[in-house]
Length: 242
Image 1 (cartoon, one colour):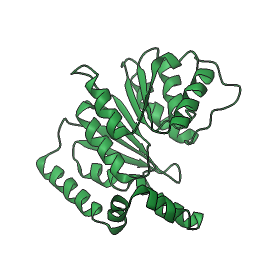
Image 2 (cartoon, rainbow, N blue to C red; image 1 turned 135 degrees about the vertical axis):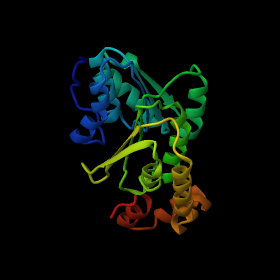
Image 3 (cartoon, rainbow, N blue to C red; image 1 turned 120 degrees about the horizontal axis):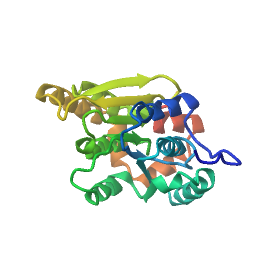
Image 4 (tube, rainbow, N blue to C red; image 1 turned 45 degrees about the horizontal axis):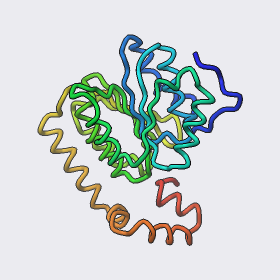
């Protein structure tokens, strides 16, 4: 096991959420786990949890996507200091997930499998749906998908969409204000009926006025508007918090 850091790395997951993320790995210790997470932040939540668990198992690898350059560089430094024995099992990937994931997958062998994916990137619900669709073909039967902020705006499309696909077993863990969503793949493809139902639900959700506006209004304009609103209102609109 790697040495403990002299000061904890900042992380956004509580102990119950971290235990849930590690549970599938610990339940199948013989599996050579390939783990991808989107949104590392400073490395002290999911990233170090995955790394220490893989180090405990003695095999497996973690790839982490982070889009903020300053956060990305701090995260790498934090992990080198906090988990020096395990950091060799980690490959950081800089950039936005919709660009990074296709490029990363193209670099892997044709039979490469993503055994566990954790989605915790930006607040736009479209990002999680896009990430899921990019990764789903590479997640094998028995593989796992987690997403954070499942009760907030970030997860408002992915959670109902996946629940309607009959080749995924889904559970929303109510262990935080944000919520942790877990899905396990039961079959390679959904039935046509369940796929049609999921796509119909997604289409209707995409037609919500708030999401149409978010997609149509330039990011700089949104930032200008948010700068003039009370912080509580900004949180309610951007994150879906109350």
